Each structure stands twice: as C-alpha cells, then as structure tokens.
Length: 258
Length: 264
Image 1 (tube, each protein chain N blue to C red):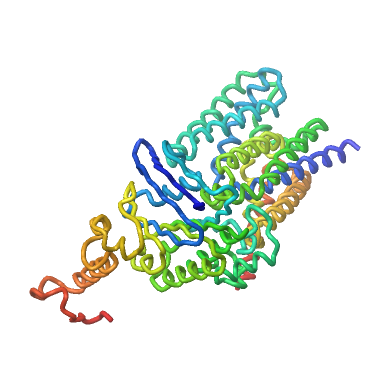
Image 2: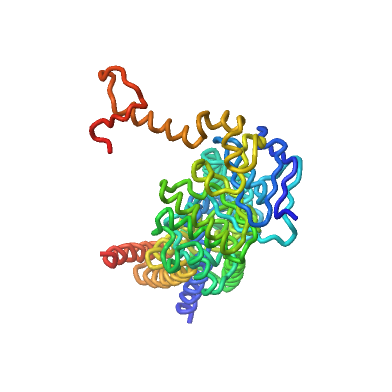
C-alpha cells in the first residue's frame, strides 16, 4: 500500500485555482521530487498534504498510523527567542537526550545540541531541522525546498545527506525543489508540476519530456539550459557596448573574472 | 499594624502580577505582540469607566473590554498593516471614550490617575484574591500550552505538521493576555502594564539559553522590580506603579550592560 496517495486534488486560495486535479503517490522507500516554476503550487501541494490548507475537491490519504517528518523551507527565529538545537528537537514533545544526539548525528550535525539556533550556519540549521524531522523514525519525510538558502556545494551536500538518511532508515522522501541539476541525480521519481501534473517519471524521462522543456527551456536538459543562461548574464555584465560584436560561446574570459 | 499590612499587601500584589506576567511576557516579546499588549491595556480604561458607572467590579469591566479587544484582533487574523492601523484606532478610541466616560461620573468616586498609573498601595484583601486568582489562571494557561505555543511561535506549518493548531495557540495567549491586563490595572495602571510584560523578559534574554530559563529569569526580575518599586515608592513618596516600572528599566539597563561586559 502507498504511504501517501493524493487523488484529484483541487485547491483554491483567495479565489485563484492553485492546484487542479493533482494525483500523486509515494511508495515506501522512494525519493520523489516535485519540480515546477514559481507559483506552480509546489509548496501548496505539500501544505495540503500536511493539512495546513483546505482542499475543495479530491482526497489526501496517508497510510493509517504513518509517521511523517516535516522539514520547512527555513526557520525564522526571532533573536529574542533563546533556543538551543537540543531544546528545539524537544518541541513539542520532550525527547530523551540520547535520541536527540542520535538524530543530530544521523542528520550530520553531531554535537551541535548545545548551540543556539541563531548561531548556526544555513546548512547546519537545515540539518538541525532534518534531525527534528527524523525523531520518531518517520516512514515519510516531507521537505519544502530545504536548500533554498544554501550555496551550490551546500545544496549538493544536503541532498547527499538525504540519500544517506534514506539508505540508513528506509524512509520515503517527498520534497519540493528547484535545484534541477541536483534533483535529477538524487531522485527516484520526478513530478513536474504547474498547477497540474505536467509529467512525471524517472528523472531522465522527465528531463526529455516536451512538457518539462516547455517550462524549463529547451536544449540538452533543463539544468544545462539554466547554466547557459546564467553564463550569458555574467558575460553581458563583463562587457561594455564598445567591445564590438563577439560570440557568447567563445571561451574568452574578460579581465577580473576567474 | 496598619502601615505594615498595606505595604505587605502592595508587595504581594506586585509580586503576583510579576509572576503571572513573566511567562506571557516572553511570548509577547518572541511573537512581537508588544503593541497588541499596549493597545489592549489602554482600551481597558473604557471597561473601568463602564464598571464604575454600572457599579460592577472594576476587574470584571476591564476583563470584558480586554477580551473584546482580544476577540477583535483575533478576528483581524494578522492582516499586516491594516490590522496594525485598526488595532491602533480601536485601542485609542476605547481609551478616549473611557476617559470621557469617567468625566461624567461623580468626581468623588473615581480618580482616573488611579487606573492610568495604578494604585497599588490601596490594594485590598479582596483585590489580592482577584490578582492571585486571575494571575494563577493566566500563568496556568500559558504553562499548560507552553510547548505547543512555542512550536507555533517558531512557524505555523511546523506546528501543523506536529498536529498543533497555531490559531488555537494564539487564542490561548490572547486570552491569558486579557487576564493579566485585567488583574494588573490596579497594580501598575493601564498605561504601564505592557512595560511589566516586556521589560523583565527583555532583561532576562541575555542570560537565557533556553525559553524556560528566560521565563524563570523574567519572573525573578519582575518580582524584584515589584518589591524594589514598592519599597522605593514608600521611601521616596513616588507613585508606586511607575516606580516599579522604573526599577525594572534599571534592571534591564544593568542586564544589557553586564551582557556587553561578559561578551568582551
């Protein structure tokens, strides 16, 4: 039986249809990633699954007794609120210190228990959030753009951590991401969302699907297209208009760029 | 006997309010509800005036208006700037109407200063029962919901994923706030209640590593301010409510200074 099955889900927020006829299943032990442009309803879908937004039609069914761990996009901690990582893991239920330590270790931040949340780096904070989600040994982890504030190496390291957690605990993972290039490597299945499910399947299948290309650009894959786009931008900034015509794909590096 | 007993009653009243205000004050600081606390407190003057006009207990009048403000703000549902403006309109209108209403009452029956700045030296035995009873109820509410409200403070979705309704937690906190405001009006007065919520919590912050430690320290600082304030007011013949807040402010300055020295 699926851990999670979403059938014909429709969500309207403030009169706007955000999700229309969405179907989604998560099987035990698999990593499913939802990709989609801004405003495509990725986060709304996760929040509907968590019961944080009501849906107008369809159903969200979690396997009875399913343990769910949730990792939010980030945590806005007011500087007036003192909170150690260990205390945070004991919210809302008290957890024995040994379990707290084990969860922090599994998330790759062993020994950070006594440190204030506000003193952690972005990557460490995401791992502490992951550690909290791992308490109670959930069978399903739900992550909402967990690497939104991280740089590229930090993002890659975080997804490796997710795979390590899955390998160690067998937990299924459902996450939202827009780090397309990393997603392609780390997922068993990708769901491309834009209000409805455009296409889904194995990463290489989705990357070559026309629906996906329509959203994320054409070329040899969405990720590469994005890279090229970024490169062009940097290039244009590096040159004034007095340089004369040149080809973007030439490998000449202007002075001051590495 | 007379002298001693009214000072003892004043000290007990001050300490009671400080203990009730400490855990709630921490949430007021963490959730940035300071303005809401202030607005609710100011509005209770209208409740005081109505209670006096209708010959009802002042505590009841203040509580009804404070609860009304809480319900009003909960109905606004945190709708950003507009909510802020509406809150300001409601609070100051209630304060203004309250002061106007007071002027219609026979002058012998009410001194508005007593409710604006408190009249802790006139606290009776019955007042003490109301203060400690209401304060215990407010503190009990906050401590009962402590972990759930903390989770909701960190993030609504985080709370929902743990099976906690953040709207309900906010409602519990506003309820506790209404209670504290109603019992504190006799002690520090409508204008300075918010100070008793915020200043001890802020003074406790530099020396707290966990939320629990911050609430405990805030209770100690609040109680010390109440005792020191009542003592100083007696000796210097100053108004007791403002003196309590002034002592708390001095403790806050000490705390910030000490924290700066320790960090160096």
